[in-house]
Each structure stands twice: as structure tokens, then as C-alpha cells.
Image: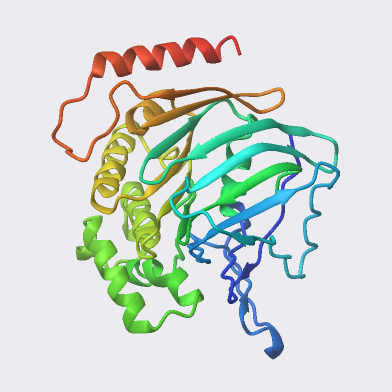
Length: 329
């Protein structure tokens, strides 16, 4: 297994780069006055904003993977150079590889586009590099070689765990990332209220996380992401911990929100059926090292009309084909 990258500091600055990981937990602490713009917390559905032009992260083939920061020190932001790129895919991976400092080869060269306004589901076995790609798309990890081009201003990251603060109510949890970014109270409250209405949770705005079901907690996480009005949602197995029935409802909820907001989605999952249901494009990954085995356009993708029938027989056949291919790749 590759070593974990123990990045655990949120850095809120003019470039608004956000760091951290779902396993880091929530940690708060007082920083020296000269560094008042940083908070020692774990990011939750973290939006990032940047220039409207494309941002490109390129790592020469001779460069080593960046070392993880030691505990108690600030993480070094990934350097992004601004280049023209209006109208391009939200994220483009070009010849991207990842090799960790211990020599573990996590990703073979990957070429992949995340189109604007589409759901791209990425499915594959554990250890095939799905989350590594997602972290690169977020700017939380850099490639060993190759280029990651981002043509997106606003990104939200949704983890498998809802990562809600137990002592804050639903409204405050939904406002949390905007508060970290320094958004004015009235503005962040308006955005959070609208987001909670979108996911049907206005009636529990003052409830604490312990009073919510697992599905409701995940909807709060989605609301927190929606409050930043993202162009791109990065979702790392967000429904994996839910029971089968709730998971199906959350997939439907995601597609409904996609129809209303039109954001792009990069969705990581181990569930072939889930990948086929929500994806306009299904990326099948294999390991040894991690690589893209196939990219499949859905035979019956989600459409703007939520009531339009879909070809369930074709989707079932595709799911069976993917399952068979993963058994041999």
C-alpha cells in the first residue's frame, strides 16, 4: 500500500488552496498572530477558487514526489501557473503518473478528461489509484510526471464520511467552509439556507448531527458543498457507508441536484451498479500499477429530464460487462 500523505492543515489565503484529508479528524488550535489566516482543521466539502483561466500543474519526469509536511508545520501550496483555457474540460490528466517516496508505483500514465457539466464515475478495485486521481484533481497531490490542467474556479470535495462537527447544528455545519474562507455572515447564511432547501433539510437546520440519520448527514455534506456553488464536485465514495436503500436514494438525489445546478462530477466508487447508474462516462481502472483499463460512454446516460425513461437493460448489460472485465484485467 502507498504511504498516506498526512496533510492536515487548511491554508486559507488569497489563492484559497485547501488541504487535508477525511482521516485527519477535526482539530482546532490557536496560531501565532502573524499566521492568523490559517486554521488547524480538517477540510469538509472544501471549495477552492482561483483564476477564471485554466490552471496547469506540471511535474517534470525527473522530479520526485513532494515530501509530506511534518506535523505542526504549514503545508506548501501546489504551484499553479495561469494559462488561457476557457471552454476546456474542467480537469485534464495528460500522461499523469504517481510514484511514492518508498518506490511504490501507484499510477501508470493516465490520460483522462473530466468534461464540464457531466458525471464521470470512476470504478475499480482497491489500490488502483482512484483516490490518487481525485486528490490530483483537487490540487491536494501532485503527479510524479505528466500534467494536470484545471479549468475550474470553484471546486467542492465530498468525503465518504460526512465530517460534521458534532457540536455545531446543521446550519452552522453547512456554513463552515465559507466561514473558514472569511465569507461575510449574511452571504454565507443565505447560501447555506438555499443549499439546505435544495436537499430538503430546512426543517432540521437547528438539529445537531447526533439527531440525524446517516442519509440526512450525507445530505448535509452535499448541502455544504452546494453552498459554494461549485463547477466541479469531487466525490470520494460518498455513499459507501450507507445501507443499500439509502444509497439508491442518494444516487437519485445527486442526479436531481446535477439537473438543477449543472455542475460536473468526478465520482469515485467501488460499486459497478452505482457507477453505471449515475455516469455519463464510466472510467474502469485496474491495478498493478493503477491504470485506466477502459473509458465507456453510457448507453443510456442521465438527462436533463428526470422523468425520461432510461434503457435499464442496456445499463444492466454494461454493468455485467464491466464486472467481467474487472475479473480479468
